[in-house]
Image (tube, rainbow, N blue to C red; front, side, top):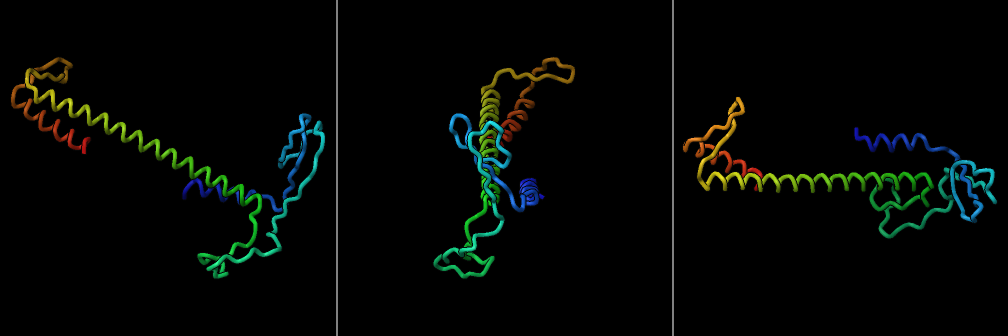
Length: 166
């Protein structure tokens, strides 16, 4: 199960049935809203009850709405509660973060592929240029390749370049 859905389910379960919100003004005259009690030094404070009940006034039906719940184009049931709005906001924020992470991952993969393509092409060019070619053997000593080994290395280098540059 996807972790973001588990998190959203936990939020729904944790939502209070009848929550209280507090509105208060600090010493500088700035208004604050919170779900926690205001500090004792607040100039003015007000308790706001948040009702979980939907708005008793039904929303006007939209053109083409069927009125059947669950069908596409169904009329909304009324304004969304603060909890629903918060959940939707958090969902959008998680989706945006996931999209940004995917974009960065794709950009990094494209950058790595470009760099590997350039290295592979440089290896092919060096082998095609001719001259003496060396490699390290198992003991770490430099060994010169003969013409057959250079030809085999060139074939492998071209395959590598084709795989990275396609």
